[in-house]
Length: 279
Image 1 (tube, helix red, strand yellow):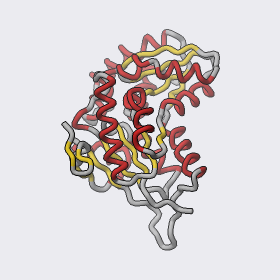
Image 2 (cartoon, helix red, strand yellow):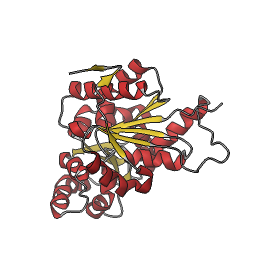
Image 3 (cartoon, helix red, strand yellow):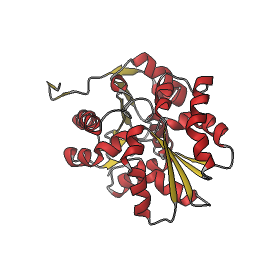
């Protein structure tokens, strides 16, 4: 069987594009419908209940668009709402926390793992719980990095101001002797060069994007929901990129990350579902 419907991927902004890129690479026949909630980012400092409301609005919009799967490509959304999203919308839901933890536990050599994320993600304890579920004998050292998302959304991955902030966040983690660092926000892989500069070559950086794409593949295959390419069809599946914010700004950052596959970017009001606008 073949299911031609798109995979819905959503995030507070452009960070989830790192997950979308991994899905493109692993599943080139699958169309993606991506929503970035740039108008309301950053999510990290917001109360969890507010993040939950936003997540349910976006998930509702995507299911109204008939996606076959939801990929929560945002750690802050996952800690606030992934169970509610799964319960409310009746389609398979994949998150990013468990895949990242799985990769880090497998990679660590000295059993000392670092985590960087938004304030909401770090405060939630979700990564600590996910590690505990694995039964692995590891220690976790965490640091919130609130300004990272703002710089990435603005297209800044290398300024002196950003480097100074990175040193303030990361040097204490290095002093804990970690050998593996989980990039616990999907924006952070865009800063991997800068993070590696501060942490050094001996610390392995773990992004959940590739592991999440593997989970997407496994779930679609198990349910016979992969999209089969038709004879004569172009190599690239059709994709759609939407933002609640400024499409031009979104496109500048997205094109830098993904190249011409991005094409156009359209504005969207995710609060409008079945003709009803929620306040």
